[in-house]
Image (cartoon, rainbow, N blue to C red; front, side, top):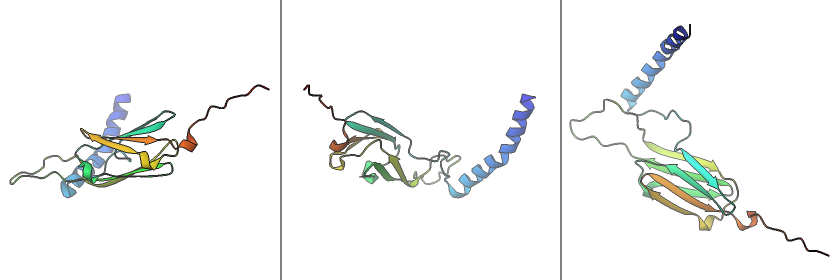
Length: 143
């Protein structure tokens, strides 16, 4: 019974696969399956947040980073792959174009102290926490 259900689901999805294939052949690109690109990780401690983003095939010079309050926005462009004379694609799954992603940060940032590095397709952004947002230890004074 489970096998029949899986076969039925497979047959149901087939037209969508054909549509996706046709789209790639006609337009040479398609939208990413994931709704958010690029994939990012955000980690934090009391002093800073660190955002890492995967940007393979992106020229670091094309990356625009902006910070406003608790939001980090990445904008960049990935150029299409150049074909040599006589070449054509038989499969094309890597998309190209202009991309933008806004990430909610865990606290306000000192924008003037943000640092970004790009190595081997990974963008690493250090975002120092605003002084007013850092936890403060309160000393209790005895009477």
